[in-house]
Length: 93
Image (cartoon, rainbow, N blue to C red):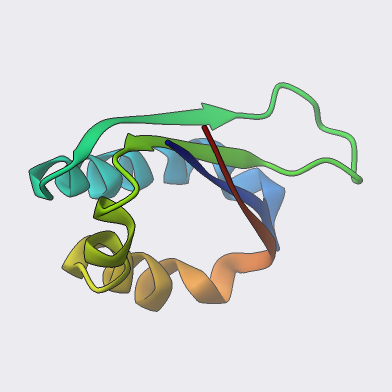
């Protein structure tokens, strides 16, 4: 399945500076059995009604509960949660 985390930052100017650390953090999830691929996409639009980044993960559905309790996911919430204005999660085949 594809698991998308779509994020609107409180300060969109941080987008470029956060890209590397966020990518590195999510690459750690590749150690979780069933997670196969991680990609970070940054918005190419600066419009105020746009979201800033999208994290795309390709995983087996059974990996989702393992991801939810993983250190990278907990660290994502702990270290980046205060920088997020809005977030949407979307799963699909």
